Image 1 (cartoon, rainbow, N blue to C red):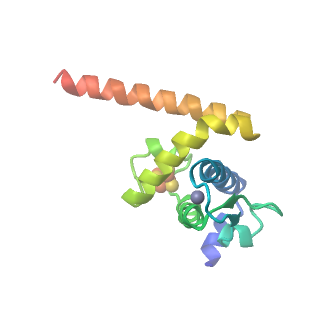
Image 2: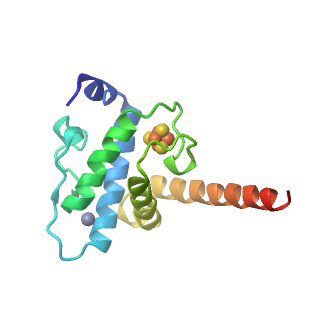
Length: 144
Ligand code: SF4
Ligand SMILES: [Zn+2]
């Protein structure tokens, strides 16, 4: 782990965002990866105590995605940070970006029933805003 990563995790917003994406991944994993072995997440953020004593539980594949997402969030150059789906920088590798899109689409609406009512509603509103913006952009392009 680098000093820079540890320093970035001193920022409460960064820790909150990482906790949320990992919690959403646990919801996604539980709903989609039946029969896989699952364990509390082991990662650099968990080593720094970001998840407290109850790290989110997921399979190794989801854990690998979250280890990647922890780094991306820690080193995100945007301030304020938009939803990654709305970002013009797209620092994620394409396959990681696709995984996160699918995972958020599944877990976002369900998070309301897993103790994440406010982030879940915020996510649904943001997703709707983004879909509207994309629809407006494509109708503008078609009109040209
Ligand atoms: S995709 Fe954009 S908002 Fe998301 S972590 Fe990367 S730079 Fe930040
Ligand atoms: Zn999984």
